[in-house]
Image 1 (cartoon, rainbow, N blue to C red):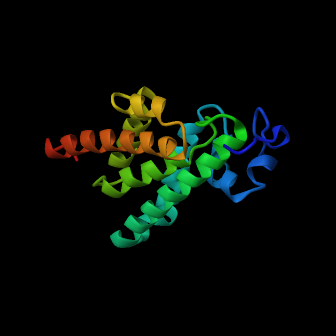
Image 2: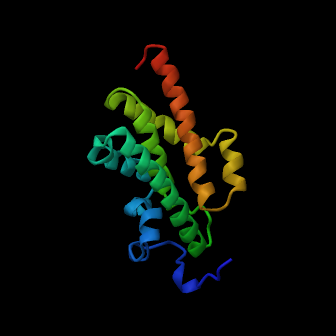
Image 3: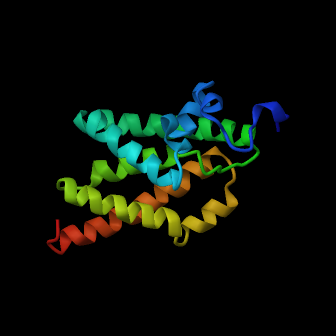
Length: 170
């Protein structure tokens, strides 16, 4: 394990610290993770904004590629940033919410109301961490673990959305 330089890991990361390196900028969701309260909610909103502005306009094959790349980059960025902060899953690291919510938006049919419902469901599952999400969150203390628990929360969200759609609600 690499030695952590205390001068490189503020107790509360500042904008200057986050914006000083690409891994930090990515892990902190382009700065959304600096917002308080509820940085995870701000990260999810950042994901939604990026979806509406850019990703949602791409063909499905491109979206799939972006998701895989964003997940891999997130594993790298969250691993480095968590190590630098001495907190494997620091609350300000929200790239996991961004990428997981992109997956939710990609697979959620309908318009803005279904997206809003998916947003609420995703935040609920991300906060509550139902089994096995909580198990993965507790055991995997690395970049992959940070990213994975939000993908699992996204899976729960998509399951509920699918049930709603199947029952005629979407």
